[in-house]
Length: 165
Image (cartoon, rainbow, N blue to C red):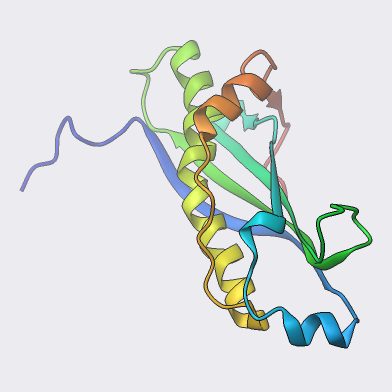
């Protein structure tokens, strides 16, 4: 079956979780009491990375970082935590032809690419919580498009000289 015309000119190549930091409190009493994540005491923060590109190869590198913390009480002081951590994800995207103009490519690399990566990071974070004894977790819905527009839309994509190793 022919697929002419339906393939995107901006192709998702691969992704990697490129940053993981995780810490659980050493307070045995807190660990015994907390069997599940308390959404009222949970915070999550997102930071979209400025995209990079290898211009001659038409490769774009996009990603973002997430910081999360489960507080043990209502003080929301960082030292009063059950667990806290950070995760990051990076994705590689390639422009396949000359049908896209520069503004379209910029929008795809800055806004659409992080949105495409979110489910992969969401899955990794949810698995981390489950596998660390905190049960299932409903990842909060976020408007990643709005976050990307407000944080990187006006920034220039950074050119790299060669593929990062």
